[in-house]
Image: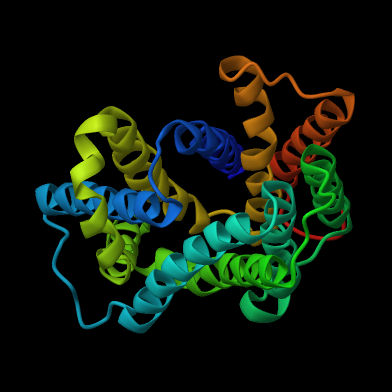
Length: 286
C-alpha cells in the first residue's frame, strides 16, 4: 500500500510542478485571461472526451453523481473567473496568496466533510507550505476590496471542488470526472471561447499545450489522484504549483528571484516531501 501512495504523491507533485509553467504561457499570449481560460477548458474537455469515446466510457449511467459533477464544473468556471478577476483588480502576489488559502480550507474541512484524519505532522507541513507561498509572492501595495473578495471566492471554490469532487472521482474515476467537469465548465465559459477563436492561429502551439496537455491530461491525472490521496496531502502538494513558478521563471524568463523566494520554494518542497511520506502511514498522530 505504501508504494502506490508514494507513487501517487510523486505524480501529484509532478502535475503541480507542470502547472507552474502556466504563468509563462499566460505572460506570452496576448489574450484576455477569461478568453484564455475558456480556450483551455474547451480544448481540455474535447481531449478527455475523445479519450473517453475511444475507451467506450463516454456513456452516462443512472448511478453517476451528476449533481456533484455539474457542481464542480460550475465551481471550476467560477474559480478561474474569480482568480483572473482578482489578478486584474489587485496584484498577482495578493491574488496568489489569497487563492492558496483554499488548500488550508480543504484540509481543515476534510475531517468533518469526508471523515479524514487531521494529523499533527500534516498540519505543520501545511503551515510551512503556506508560509513558503507567502515568501514567494510577498504581497505588498495594491490591495483592493474587490481584489480581495474575488481572491477569497477563488480560494473557496478551489476547496469546494476537491471536497465535493473526491467522492465523485472515487465513484466514476478520474478520467470520466475530468471530462464531464471540463465539459460543464466549458459550456459556462462559451461566450469567452467564441470571442477568442480569431486569435488561435497566432498562438496555436501555446494554446494547445495549455489546453490539451496541461488542462486536459493534467486534470485527468489530477482527479485520478484525488480519488486515492488524502485531502491533506493534496492540499500540501498543491503549493508546489506557485512555488515551481519561481523556478520556471528563473529558467525561462530571466527572473531569478531573491533569497526569500528560494527559501519559500524550499519550505514548499520540504512540505511536499512530508506529504508524500505522511500518506504512507495508516493512522494515528504523526
